[in-house]
Image 1 (cartoon, rainbow, N blue to C red):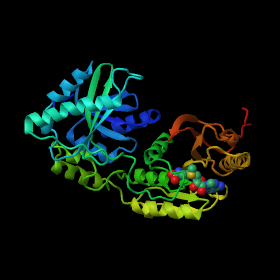
Image 2 (tube, rainbow, N blue to C red; image 1 turned 180 degrees about the vertical axis):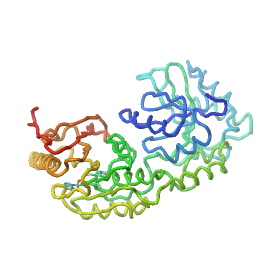
Image 3 (cartoon, protein in one colour; image 1 turned 30 degrees about the vertical axis):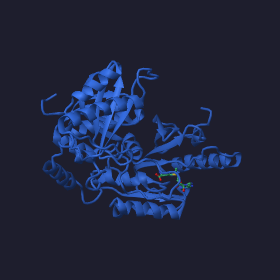
Image 4 (cartoon, helix red, strand yellow; image 1 turned 90 degrees about the vertical axis):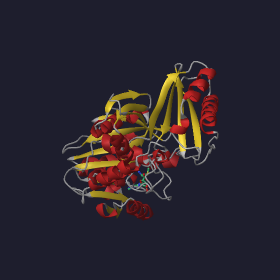
Amino acid sequence: MKVDELRLIATCPEETKDVLITELKQLGVSNIEPAYRAVHFSASEEQFYQAHLRLRTASRILRVIKEFPAKSPEMLYSQARRLNWPELFGVERTYLIEGVPGDRGSEFMRANDISKKVREGLQDSFQRRVGQIPKVDLKEPKVIIVAFLAGGRCVLSFDTSGKALHKRGYRQEGHPAPIKETLAASLLMLAGYDGSQPFLDPMCGSGTIAIEAAMIALGKAPQIHRPKGQFQFEWLRSFNRELWRTVQESVRAERQAEPSFPIVASDISETYTELARRNALKARVEKHITFASGKFQDIVPPAPTGILVTNLPYGERLSKASLDDLTALYKEIGDTLKQRFAGWRAALLVAEESPYKVIGLKTTRRINLLNGSIPCKLLIYDLYAGTKRKTPAS
Ligand SMILES: C[S@@+](CC[C@H](N)C(=O)[O-])C[C@H]1O[C@@H](n2cnc3c(N)ncnc32)[C@H](O)[C@@H]1O
């Protein structure tokens, strides 16, 4: 690691870590090390700002302050006290400490004990050095400190993203089952979508997947519209406003004027198609997506080849009648893909408990994922003329 490089951690769901690693490699950062639900890496200050704007699949970004041994509460306190906290952020900033016990069932310290010990050390450090202590704010702190304790060591970091990175700011209320923006981007990347193919989401709901696809196709950074003051690195003393502005400008300038291939989103419900359009407008990609209403079963593919990514409807706790309906729908989706989508790749996110086996086509790849807390699979099909249906049992 170069002397002036920053030690950083990007967090993500365990199942999508590989796509995050791909993104980090594209950013050109160094020392990429996968960890549990996270990837550690080091980066220049410029790459640090780029990462906040560009990463599509990371949930949060943490900047490591210090790592030290902490085999007892007293050690944790004294190490936290030793740090020159006023040098890191001003006493006028509100803050919050998140204690994270990494050892399962650790008797040594629970989340609250960890944050309490670090808080005591931080307060003493401020008191001793500037004669005042900053205020804790549990709801909207300007500074979030994460104290991760595992195996007798503590990693202290600032959550520099602040508001979770899936919050892109374009989604409005109105759909009961939208997927997280970061999951949508992960599905697209897992399906191999990079904007150099026509794209279709035939069950688009609030439009998340198509909007993320448009941003990928345009090379548009997902956080480029986050308002001023909403990344928490902006409240730290290390914030380099001039460099941040330069990075924002250069990232903004990378955006292409038009996608090279069509992006189509449709849904059986006109209300949802309209919602998707409004969300796309907020994300400033509306004019690059063609919206339509209609049944998946009736769709004519917008091009001879392309990538279709969608998440299929799935009701938790289905009654027998709705399970029958869903089974019929899934079977029809299998028929539609087989009959009309030769030449396409289809990636369907389905719940483990859904009747996905009746789709009946041979998958190229199956990837286990979680959609919130629902265990799911991403089924990837490469469809070609003569694609055969399988019986559900095969
Ligand atoms: C799980 S939701 C998709 C959510 C979407 N990915 C989002 O982020 O908002 C499934 C969508 O499929 C739509 N749908 C159900 N049956 C359909 C059909 N036969 N053809 C097209 N869309 C259908 C529903 O209206 C619903 O919006």
